[in-house]
Image 1 (cartoon, rainbow, N blue to C red):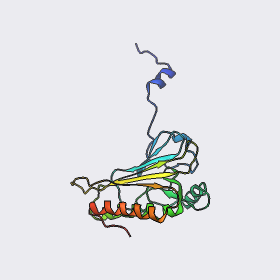
Image 2 (tube, rainbow, N blue to C red):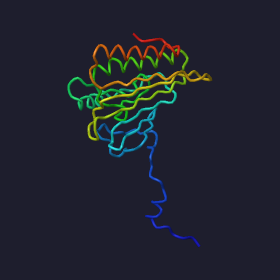
Image 3 (cartoon, rainbow, N blue to C red):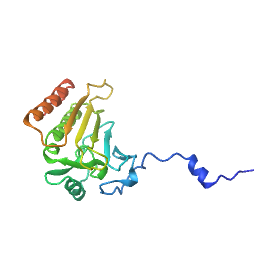
Image 4 (cartoon, helix red, strand yellow):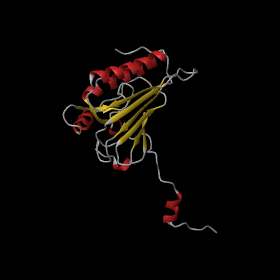
Length: 205
């Protein structure tokens, strides 16, 4: 004889979903992604939303070069949350198939977005062009508190690897989300280029 399971018990027996279904076509361009808290969202790459509904991490296990469609309206909206001098910056570049959706967009200080962060992305492209076509790539976002949607730091990393080859040394930068001093710019660029050279990738200017 079959035993009926109360709806509440059946629901309790099913673990809460921690990963959003793929694809997520309608990700809202909102400050807080309340429906996606503590979830991984797959949209080409994998994006993690923190407990407060903010983009926290973007990961590509095998990064590839290619253009993703741009959503200028959402990019502008996200940049405006940072105030004057901010872009809606991609955690993984649109030219590396990073989507123009809130899970991949944060207010990024303009000189960072168009400076050292872009240089890091260029370095990743150089590694892929050098045959490192299984390069792992990650961007981790740090916020100053539980409510701000403007990050105070990015930790970007890549591990270049050619198909069938061994992993190269990790290239890792900790980038403040603020205008850099000339000394800090030089320090970060030198760290990036040293890592690229060790991996046999073309350095960036």
